[in-house]
Length: 156
Image 1 (cartoon, rainbow, N blue to C red):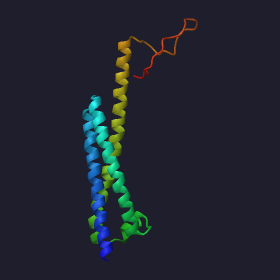
Image 2 (image 1 turned 45 degrees about the vertical axis):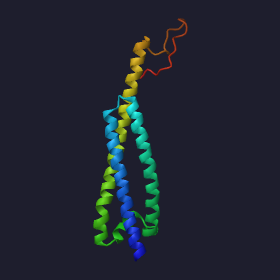
Image 3 (image 1 turned 90 degrees about the vertical axis):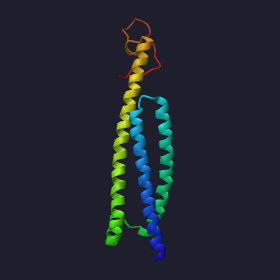
Image 4 (image 1 turned 180 degrees about the vertical axis):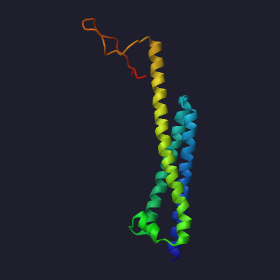
């Protein structure tokens, strides 16, 4: 029973640690949205995010080991149903927070990816204006010679 209680406490601590890391990732994602047009800041934030993702991977491995010890190969729902009411009351809010954080992070990452794509498209458009390129370099009337080539994609 002592080992089970230690594993239980360790599992709760690991789940809380995962939630803290996810919360930090969410905060960095919000900061990235605010600084989306500052390339240096986006790079710094991405580096901080990578450190947190690496930490999350280590913590997740620990969680998987603890889960295997405490749940003995059972599915999550089955294992949760086997817990005492006191244990369910203790772990339930942590799992709900974990699910909410994961959903929020997925949504935020999707939005940030779209914002980065828009920002990149704007930069490419601006470069095309500065270089005087007017249209896609692949379209030219036949027999007029080769169209100018550009190293920049022209998506707007």
